[in-house]
Length: 135
Image 1 (cartoon, rainbow, N blue to C red):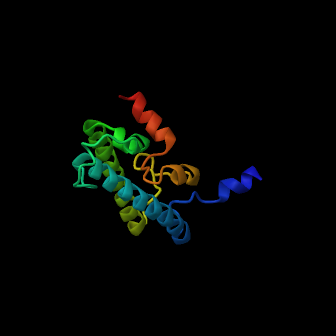
Image 2: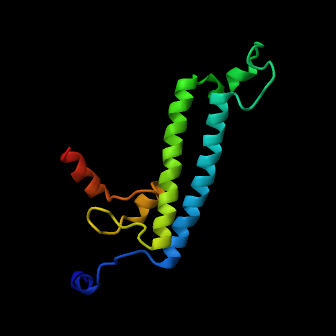
Image 3: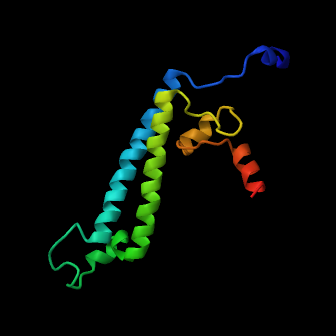
């Protein structure tokens, strides 16, 4: 059995069907990320209201977690979310180029399990650990 495995060429890229599966995952994550980003921007700019909401004491605001964020915290989260959106969009480009899921250091395929959790990953776990050791 192990000898049979030696004769199977190592897979160099994911099939078009597999790429479509990842594309669906990324598109859903991208939509959620953009919604969250818009919400954070609204918190920062108070874009969600132009009334006296911010001057009248209410307990409703305390129930909304994002409303408790300082503008600095919301801005930091928005910046992270924006970078996440850019990474997801770059992953979609790699899908179109059929280079998605290939480690940029080793050239090996990133395991599907990792890509399902971190769909914008460009490194295998081994390559990431190797790079962290060299820092």
